Image (tube, rainbow, N blue to C red; front, side, top):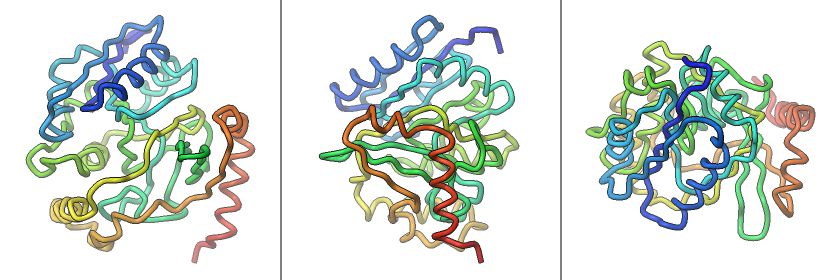
Length: 268
């Protein structure tokens, strides 16, 4: 990878305001770095949109992003560029033991990462596990809100637009398939990552594609499809504004929260 690689940000979005906000975020993060932002606004499925965006892209590093995220780290590009020298795919939350059609299905102590979300009246900081800093390794699958991959890993894996012909689980399939192919995955804990919305998708459809996921990966059948709709298990804290969240986004604070999770959920 070159000293200053090119980033290609691929966003599937039908919401003009969200797309503009996400684009502004990435323009700020990648200022001074070669980059492009590719918007796909008519995708019949997330997998088809990501594949089409990847075919149009020219970057060394591909960012597959939802349109309602916010990343607050001026060193984002430098950190990602350096870490992808030894890893193939990075995310902000994930699991070291995938057991079914949800990255969080295995529960503690296999969940890793930190993600903030803006609720109606506050900011919610979700701490799933910070066993290493700044990057957690030995990850099998990552949360799909933002996945960052080398071009080699992305093209070798691709998105399964046949099995996942909607907007469900193609991202989980992508990261797990890459892991199974021998690519190294990691979860970044030191990059403040905000997700704008909760999960409001049709649960019947989610269960439908959870069944497809289990049919594709029969060895994961210890987690039934209905468990794919539950909330991730983690330690949560509420803050009045994003500045308070950033103040708490420190390794000692996050690690202490992880230790508290261990005491609450002793390993049998």
